[in-house]
Length: 602
Ligand SMILES: Nc1ncnc2c1ncn2[C@@H]1O[C@H](COP(=O)(O)OP(=O)(O)OP(=O)(O)O)[C@@H](O)[C@H]1O
Picture 1 (cartoon, rainbow, N blue to C red):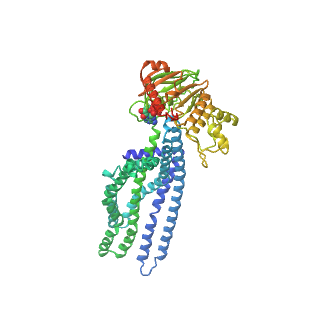
Picture 2: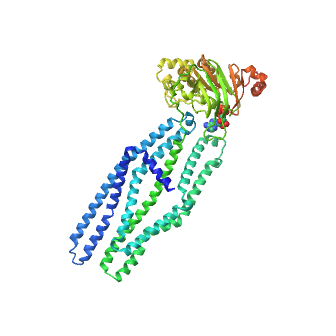
Picture 3: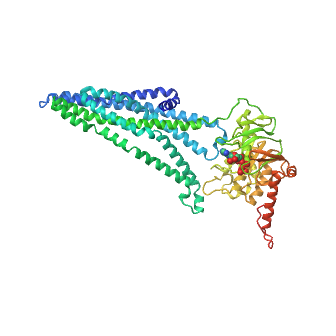
């Protein structure tokens, strides 16, 4: 455990680079300041001795005044040194935290794009920022304090025996007992508390986010907070853990506080005992010293307690940063080949999502011929989206190869690869920017005219007409929101503007109403003209005319061919087609026979 703590600190300092020496300087200055901070206690003892030795004539007052000034000056020097120490450690800490953020971000940039899907991006920012912040606090404040905290007890123990070893021994006894109480609190079954506590906090905040996301469902179904069992359980577990810990600390904490504050209870009878058998003045002077010094020793022990908490915190921070740094970066072969054409091929591809226990794709092989439309169909969870996301390297295949124009995507320059493919996702995301910038995101150097022409091809004219500032309208600002279908048309305009030779469409008409669907279909036609297309489709009506259809089921290719040949196979596709036909007939059956009107949803 101790080894692990040391290595965490060493690892944080590893990011300090040239500023490691500044951290060291800060620690030395802080230690010097702490030792100097003990001198005023000695001065007080010396001043009191001078006064009492000449009592009642008080001829020693001038000597006492000298000691008083020495105390003031050493206190001032101690403060200045501490200030200089903090300056050094703060500069080093800011640089180190910046280096940690930079290294973590540099690593993150090498991770597969799929790593950033879902809620990962927010969590990532928090992980990097918060934990780099924690190390900043450790290096800027806690580490110089730690240096002082290590040095002062050594000096303090020496000083304890300087004037009266018996009273010194009593003070030391209370310090040792306080330390033992602290070990009692932090050891045993409480040893892993901090780690469990951090985990519970993380779990609770994760569940809270889920809860807030689910509020619409809660309201719609008139549920209470108790229906969010996971969130409720996280709060309860956190509260149980915290109260169990508090309860288990009560004996240790009581003893700790009693010992660090209770030196007086031993010093007074000891002083009375010593005074009865010796020089009252000397005993009185020594008593003043120890009475003042004992609480200062208590403070030191208190700081040791907070120190161990800080080291545990740093340990946790490094552990959480490791969560990111241990993610396998995307392989970079260093070779940069140019694809011969826009053909896409999967060659015995197997892929398992990080943390999943079974592969999402197993030994999948198929070819998408240049200039043709290939459709991926199959039951939900069959692996369609996964297969499509391997093309632009959202993830890398565990085995097998995904190639474009005969070149493995791993051997292509990332920029080239991105230029080759345009993606239209199921859930389109628009930035909080003008429509112009949203469309231009695909090709930042495109002119306004080119953006307008792409928007026109994507059937966005009616959207631009109804918005107050047309192409310059800010999305998401002052009540400007677009429907799902409208957003998809903007996304299609973006893809049209990109003009990439390979287009991957992911069920882009899933949420569109009939009016939008018609326009989206027309936008599709503009997008896929003369392109190599891989289309993920749930509704078989959209894939009938595809040149090639691949049926993915359970992560494997169940069958492939054209519509007619697949029907003739009487397999998965034929069954899906039969289901689709039946549901179409069922909806037609719901049409009102008298009026002839009915749902137009097929
Ligand atoms: N990010 C992820 N992490 C772990 N497993 C995932 C992830 N995304 C998908 N999966 C799993 O991989 C398998 C294939 O999912 P995929 O989304 O590719 O299927 P799909 O055919 O596109 O489904 P749908 O038609 O419902 O969109 C499923 O078992 C799914 O649970």
